[in-house]
Amino acid sequence: MKRKIAIFTGSRAEYGLLYWLMKDLQSSSEVQLQIIVSGMHLSPEFGETWRQIEEDGFHIDAKVEMLLSSDSAVGIVKSMGVGTLGFADALDRLQPHMLVVLGDRFEALAIAQAALIMRIPIAHLHGGEITEGAYDDAIRHAISKMAYLHFVAAEPYRQRVIQMGESPERVFNVGAVGIDHLLRAPKMSIEVLRESLGFDLHSPYLVVTYHPVTVMDEDPQESFIALTEALDKFPQYQIIFTYPNADNGGRAIIPLLEAYAQAQPDRVLAIPSLGFRRYLSAISMASAVVGNSSSGIIEVPAFGIPTVDIGVRQKGRLAANSILHCDPNSDSIEQALHKALTSEFAAACKTTVNPYGKGDASEAILKVLENYDGASHKSFHDLS
Image (tube, rainbow, N blue to C red; front, side, top):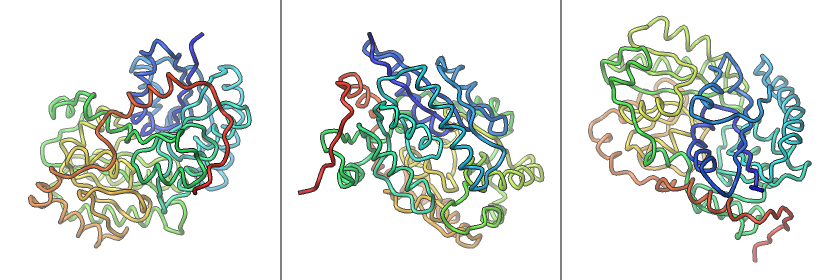
C-alpha cells in the first residue's frame, strides 16, 4: 500500500508555494497524495480559491469550513476551534501517514495540533524563520516543535530549528518551495495577463499587497491610508492591488482598498486573488512589489524585481539587497518607492543573490518523503 501524504492548504499564497510539491507527490509512484483545504480557500469573500486547485488538476479529499465572519482576535480564536473540530474528522477519515504543513498561519496551527494528538507525523516547511511583526512568529515555532520532519529555506533557519531541540538528521535545508516556480512555471505575456485580468495594463505598474500587523497596536486602516497616500505620489504607475489575508484587522482594509480602486478605475485594479500563475507573471514584469507580504522577501528577489517592505511584519527574515525596508507612514514609503523606481536600483536588483535557494526544493522534499520510514517519536536534541 502506498504511503498516504496529506497536504494542508488554507490560503491562496500557501497553495501557490505548495503547487510543485503537490504535483510531484501526485506523480510519485511511491506515495498517494491527499489534499485538505480550508480557511480562505472556501470563502467567497476571498475568492473561493479552492476552485483553482481543482482547475489545476488536483482532487480535494477534504474541505473543512472554519472561517467566521469576523477578523477580531476572538473571532480568529473561534475559527481555530471550528477548524480543529473539522480537521479531527477529516484526519480520522483520511488516515494519512504524514501531514505536510507550510508556514505559520492560524489555520495551520489548528490542523497541526489535531494531527499531534492523533499521532499523525507532521512535516513542516519554512520553519526557523522570524517575523517579529506578527503572531505568526510564535505559531511557526510551535508547529516546528510539533513536527517530526523539517524542510527549511536557508541554513540559518536550519540551525535555528536545531537550536530549538530538533535532531539535525531530521532538518533539511532545501530552499524555499516558491522559488521552484522560477524554473518550472510558464509565465504569461503582458497581453495574456492583461486579457486574463480584464484590466488595461498600459503603463508601468506596481503589485501591492498589504496585510495587518497582528502583534502591535497598529491601526491597519491608518497604515493602509498611509500606503495609498504614498502611492498617489506616483500617478504614472498603475497598481494591481491584492486583498489582505484573514488575520485580525484584514477585513477592515478591504473596503478601503475597494474604494481606492473604484475612485481610479483606469489606474488601480483590486482583486481578491491573482492565483499563483498570474501573480508570478505580474511580479516578473512589475516595476516593484510593495507591501508586507512574505512573498516580497522570499520569492520576488529571484525575479530581480525591487521590493518595498513596509513596517515590521516581516522583520527578522533574511533579506536580499533588492529589498528596501521602510516605516508604515506615507513619507517613509514614498522615499523607499522613489529609490526602488530609479533605473540604478532596478539594474542592481537584476544581479541580486536570493538567499532562499535555486528552485529545486520540491524535488528534494519528495525524495525525503518517499524514503520516510514512518517513525514519529523524537527526543529533544541538546546542543553540545
